[in-house]
Image (cartoon, rainbow, N blue to C red; front, side):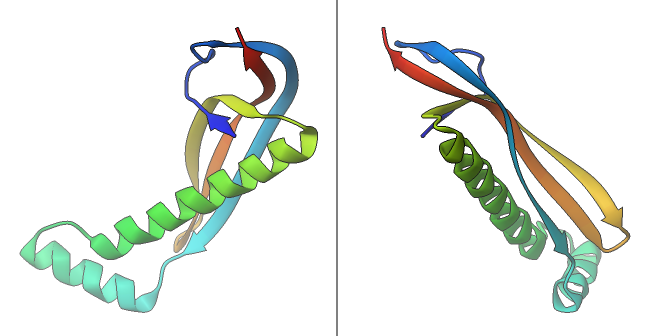
Amino acid sequence: MILTTTPTIEGKRIVRVLGLVRGNTIRARHLGRDIMAVFRNVVGGEVSEYTKLFAEAREQSLDRMVEEAAELGANAIVEVRFTTSEVRSAAAELLAYGTAVVVEDE
């Protein structure tokens, strides 16, 4: 599956647009990670616990979006984007979305 943030793929032409596809996950903070984050706020530096949490959430969202596109018969997704939203004070949603398409070589 080809994923791109652009509306076209070099060397390919879109022969069919299948529509919007998306994948999301909602992640809650973990008490242990919160304690480390507070410590990092005092001494400074990257909060690697949260970096890892969001990296995992991005991958899971992408995987779910790709699965939805594959079910539609797509072999590519164009205009891929991410968005986040707070669900509650200790949880956030990460949403990946794009347009599922069928592409062929030019």
